[in-house]
Image (cartoon, rainbow, N blue to C red; front, side, top):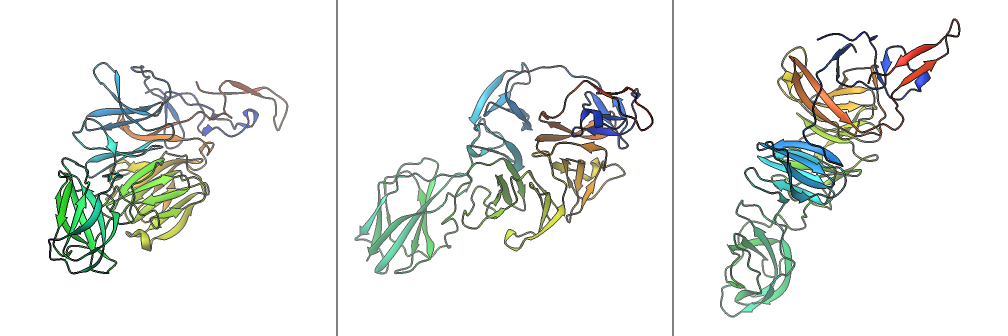
Length: 418
């Protein structure tokens, strides 16, 4: 691979045209930049599909997914035609895999595509808005008293919806539920308090097929775990870690209940940051979270006991983080994965435990207000992180003439590589 006759420095998208140092470039197209800043040519590319307003690509379950104009579409690898799968809404979209499923977060909410399924659905089990009427029934063995009643739905994967309170009723024998909507493939979970009690316990579980049901047994099952929980609203970033989902929505980091990735408590399960969250990336021992101030590390396995540390004042490029396998780093194999993201000063490596290591200190300068997406690649035996960034309005390609010199006035060309 031929070397380009360029001085070794890097990319500078911030300085004025006449302030560029010798060896700095505005754009580096179809070139590779090694660890010391030297350029070498890369083979080009050919266009196989062209659509307007495309913002993301993701490969899952032997399928190529793409986000265009707010829609999640599937690309046919044979002829490169597309078919629409879901309406995500216009705005940032992110992907992550958890327990074999693909989760997609966008403005319209959290979507899930199960492995082997054709189309994604909104994540979580939703209970119908129309709830049944509750009334006393003359047959049963319930102890007389005032009972509070709640219902939830369970799908065929065993996932439960948020529990919804149907009301309170005085009973002396049994309980009748009338006007139950039919939900084939689903099962109702009936929760009741003890007589004149407050805590809800599982009374029974039954198929959601008939419009009426009579409960006659004292509620002595497990406590209700899904009361006051909700599904996630929209967001712009999602990651899975320690049996939970973590979703960024503006300046708020939401997290799910443990072992219930589709449910969260909007009263408790969140952490607020400084300005919009730019990325989330888990490593062993905690989470890296970038915001408008810099990068934080949330250490600890349990969110309620997190310790929050400010680990870098260098701002990240929004959306540019990814997991970095230990084998991808130069110099050998590490035991665990780390995180990598593009910042205003080049790539940063976030290590387990919260240490941040700059990979190109002083060689790259990028406007921190742009957004990007990063993939890892192995090209010609060289391991690379490749980040596609949005257009930077302040940059321009072309020739700048610098007429300043410490010794004398002369013309000096700083050519951008195009």
